[in-house]
Length: 184
Image (cartoon, rainbow, N blue to C red; front, side, top):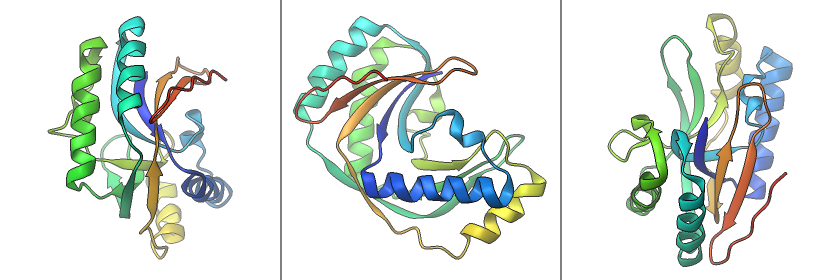
């Protein structure tokens, strides 16, 4: 998997990390930790033409200013492999930004997932996936259903994420207004 995402600000990262730990302790859920940092995904693809992507992200992020997103509650993508998530409000500034990210990066993307295209994208912060099932979904909802998820989160970066199966992700981070590259 390869993708473009934004890391959450420090307060939101801390909140999500606490939830992940509680879901692991209470319900045995730890699949979400395969990508071990809370984030919002803008695009997911099979691969990127990296030299072109790096040029595009560097140029684009120098021109972008930080903005705030708002969460609205819990959601569930249903199906064979359900995903539990925090919903993000689809307001006009968020949708404009997402469309710009998609437009700027699609030329370097190899077979991008249409689930992340502007027409289909459901903005969210993942809380549980890969190991959510009939037995632990109830536990998860009992823990989370009565919590408030009306957060404000500062978005001030884009991150290129490359992750091979059973490997920790490699990232390159671009801060808005200037380019900073971090490779763990």
